[in-house]
Each structure stands twice: as structure tokens, then as C-alpha cells.
Amino acid sequence: MSGATNNLPLSGERLWDSLMEMAKIGGTPKGGCNRQTLTDLDAEGRALFRRWGESCGLTLTVDRLGNMIFRREGRDPTRRPVAFGSHLDTQPTGGKFDGVLGVLAGLEIMRALHEAGAETEAPLLLINWTNEEGARFSPPMMGSGAAMGIFTEAEILAKRSADGAVFGEELKRIGWQGEADPAALQDCAAYLELHIEQGRLLEDAGLDVGIVTHALAQHWFEVVVEGEDAHGGSPMAGRRDAMMAAAPLISAVEEIALTTLSPTGEPGRGTVGVVEVHPASRNVAPGRVFFSVDFRHSDPEALARMGQALTARAAEIAAARKVTATVTPFWYSPHTPFDETLVSRARDSARARGLRWQEMPTAIGHDAVYMARKVPTVMVFCPCHGGLSHNEAESITPAWATAGMQVLADAVIATANAPRSIV
Image 1 (cartoon, rainbow, N blue to C red):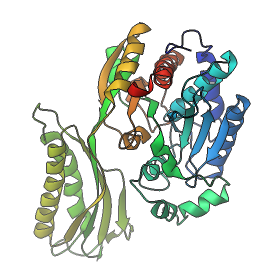
Image 2: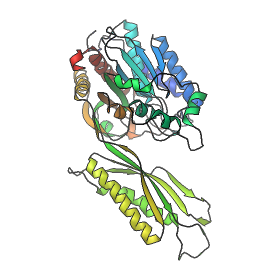
Image 3: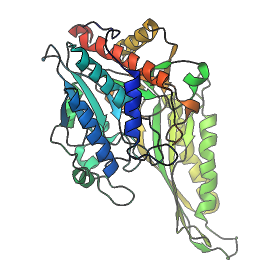
Image 4: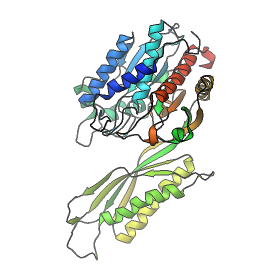
């Protein structure tokens, strides 16, 4: 078959029905999903995905980290496979579409090929990555990160959740630890991923899809402020209150993000997502505060300045309040360009289908960002209402989902059928 998919029976209606069916697993009263990684609900979602994949002739392999890889053979078994997918795990108060759209749009491509009896030159792989979200076990994107050699298998399997659960033990408990080598996925010819934007640029501009050209650099930190516990009735003078020191430092995160500019005048992005207070008693001035910091920027040099500014501000506040403030780097993801050939195929699809589109970066980590370290990669975004994500109110339209799926399908088929020299 050619690179175009106009003759494939791709069904936006079936994709939407699948999204709604998967959303029932871990569905929340407010209409979202709580299907966190390596829980019983994750196992249930995986089992449904397995049934769907096997019903359209796909062969399932599960690797040692629980990544699910469905394979559809190509006409030429010597060619490296073209992979696509995303993740089925969610945040505790997540939505129906983050990650799931990319997995089930990929499933719809496989279903349509199966129904049409169509062949591609290269084999195709549909992947459900383990623990993209990083909600229960941190950091995020563990399955793809270890597959690409960013993490070791041993360190991932040893990770603990906040309640003490061990990643490897939970993977075995739910029955989803396989035997395949995750590193085998480094041999893919290409990787493509459809995802909701998790922002409002596309919706505000009235566009159907975004073609993602690169990922912004990210740097995460952990900050610990330590002073001395004190009774709430003790005099204010002389206190070494960790909370009163942490509060201006937390506030500084936003200030640093807004005032650290790229050469083009673009500010950074800063988030404090976790705060832990010890001893967490109403009438005790805390002696210890922990908080997380997430910095992102389009300019890697500006991102470095943000981290330096946080460390400097911590030292100033600690000296003034006679506490200690330790800033420790936790995780870093560099500025990551996506493959221009794959970008052009997604762009060509959007044009040919008469869709409204624009090129754009992603400021958010995805499995595609780790894949791009080793494998030619591209992402396609579809809009989401109000930019809401990691939220039970997250929503998209069937038309947006269908447009994204069509562009993904066109780019996947064009890549799988391209001459070896230009895959």
C-alpha cells in the first residue's frame, strides 16, 4: 500500500468508543480516571488492551519493565520496525485522554490495516509504556527511559512509592513483568506519538493539530529547608522556622521563571508540585520543609541560570533566617529536537487533509522525548479544552481525536513504506 491512508477504514467513532470504554477502568465520580501505574486497575486496563490487540491479529511481547509491545509483521521482515504508542497509566485525578489517546489511536491504525488486509513494508510496533506519569513511582517516563538507556533496569525495579511499594514487586504482583529486553526497542527505525497538547495554543488558534518539532529542556530539583521545631506559643524572636524560610523560597520559583528570559524574550516555567512539612502539627513551627521544583525553558542556557538563581536565593534566605536550605538536582531532560523527515511527513499529512495546523514545541515530558535520544521521533498534538490536563475535567472532541489519528496514521504508513535509505 502507499503512504496515504485514505483507503483504510480508520474509524474515529470506534476510536472514541474505545477511549470511553478504557475510561471506565478507574473512572472517577468527576468524570476522570485514576488508573495509576502497577495498580490492579492498571492491570485491568492492560488486559483490555491485550484483548483488543490480539483480536486484530497482533502479537504481544512484554518486556522486563512491563512495556507492552504489539507487533504486526511487514512485507519485509528484515526491515527495522516503525513504532508508535503512548501510555495507559494516569495521574490520581487524571483525565480520559492523556496518553490513552496515543495508544488507542495506534490500536485503531492496526485495526484498520487488519480489516483492509493491507501490508506495510516494515513491521509495525504499538507500545504501551510503563509508568509515563511518574505519579506513583518517580521520576516519570520510566519504561521508555530505561529502554533507551537513560535509567538502568535495576534502579527502576528498585524504586519505591511514597507508601513503600517496590516497583519490581508490584510489577510481578499484577502479573505484567515479561522477559523481553527493553533495550531491543532502541533498534526501531522510527517512533511516532499522538498526544493531547496539555496547553491551549491549538484551541485558542482554532487549529486541528500541532506538529511538534522539539521538546523544551527541563530541570527538576528537590529542596530541603531545615531549622528547629518550636512550640506555636513560643516567642517569634529567635525562632528558626523552616516554613517561614521555605515560603519566600517557594514564591521565588515563580519570580525566577518569569524573569529568566531567552534571547527572544521568552520566560521560563516554574512549578512547585510537592510540599512536605515536618512535624505537620497545628501548634508547632516546623523544623523541616521539603518541596519539589520543576523548571523548564526553551533556552538551555536560561534554564541553567534558573537553577543557579534558585540555589543563590536559597543561600540568601538560609543565612537571613539561620536555617539550612539544600537544593539538590533530581532529574534533567535536555533540549531535544525531533526528526525533520518525520516532522515533514506529519506536516504533509495535515496539508493534504486540509487540516488547520502549526508547528510547535512541547514543554512537557513524554515517552517520545526519551525515544528521540536513540530513535528518529516525532509527536503530533491534538487540542484539549482550556489546556486542562492531569485533571478530571480534561476533555477533547471526537473531531480533534480523529484528525490527530489520521495524521499519525499517514506518517506511520509513509514511514513504514519509505525506501530504506530515507526511513
